[in-house]
Length: 307
Length: 267
Ligand SMILES: Nc1ncnc2c1ncn2[C@@H]1O[C@H](COP(=O)(O)OP(=O)(O)OP(=O)(O)O)[C@@H](O)[C@H]1O
Ligand SMILES: [Mg+2]
Image 1 (cartoon, each protein chain N blue to C red):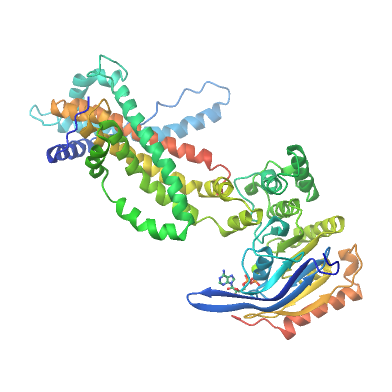
Image 2: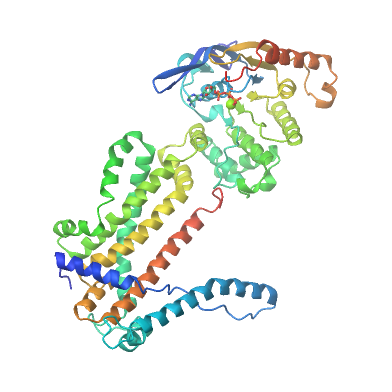
């Protein structure tokens, strides 16, 4: 199902929904409580349980307080927003079973998130490859920097959704357009951070490469990438966050099965509870994406200075 | 090739750096010839242009005028035949000790040695500096003296025609320093390789060198004097302390550095 809805009203609606939803969005990423100490090293286990507890208990308390406050604030019968108990009553199936499938109109949110993630994977993957390559060029060559950097600096301030009409006109299809929007959103921080990382390669490493007579390709793999890895991963992390922001907004306008369109659809049929559940899904997935890229970065940067 | 020709030759080398339209002359009219198998030290006050001179020989910077010859060929680019031991070790922190040496071996002997031979060659050089036991460690996990030793192994593993060392022991404590000096002397005795070493340390220069090149103060520094150190090898640091030839050589260098070219503030 691909019906592009590009008009001012749609955009206003999108912003309205996001704003309304972003306030009560709780940090719902708290992992389950510490596992019971089962093995012999009771002391060590206790210590670990304590560490986990100090990480988990405060957000749980805050979450609980927020829910209570929210319940009180929205419990009036004429309240415009649903209360937590009402959400539970309305959207229990969405909360408890993410992967039900009753046909394309009635899918679990897990499936919808996966569809959105697939688009992000394409768009972000392409952005990572192109961004690192372009960033390497800009970081490596004075002339490329003088020529390209000002253009990048202007283009990166264009809001993601502003690219959507153009990309719909170019691709004439919703799915590649959404992927393009992800690509164009994520690529700027990747380019810029990669370029900074490469400009910061110590002269010593360049001298080593020069004495060894490494060729361009060897220099790229053996010196540039590892030396600039911390910067590159900072760029990738910002990029994946922006991708996730952009996909939801883009899907609202392009339709399809993604989580973004689900929100738009729910708004059109006044299912506010569903929207709030979807927001929680989006927040948790965005958080996990960020952690995933950070983790990959830590693994990749093993052995680099200060790690 | 003409047999008498020295291995390395600097002819009327000038070096000026351009910065913001202004040009500052660092080296002016440097002439030097180094024979095969010689151990030459370069000594001079901080900022006079020693590193600049080494970088010119290494090909890392270009001469402004004059020529650097290696085996009668003009030096105009860096290469593994002039391997450098850098002042601050410059090991690649994401590679293990072994891989830091191996990367050079793979590059230089890609065609001429098999994989197994390259492995043996790498291990042999690590053993030469007594670092084979730490082959899998990262540079961040070993001490400063060990890093410098790996740096020396990396340079030696490229089998350079000239080994260039820029204050290789500058950042080390006195004991580690003495130990490494002995190792470098032993390696030089064994390989009979050609070495150019920059140093700040008069004792180090006299102990290790066949000749000591003394630089005048910058700007526009040149070679002020070259002292030949006539001490038989192998040299033992404890026996040398009382050796009259050693004391004389030491005095000559000190005189040059502190009387004739005393350190000038903000030279
Ligand atoms: N890339 C450069 N651009 C401009 N000036 C430079 C550059 N490299 C060195 N110089 C200048 O050349 C002079 C000599 O520097 P050099 O590093 O060769 O001194 P040095 O004798 O090695 O000193 P030290 O003993 O402290 O290492 C210094 O005045 C320095 O400021
Ligand atoms: Mg120096």
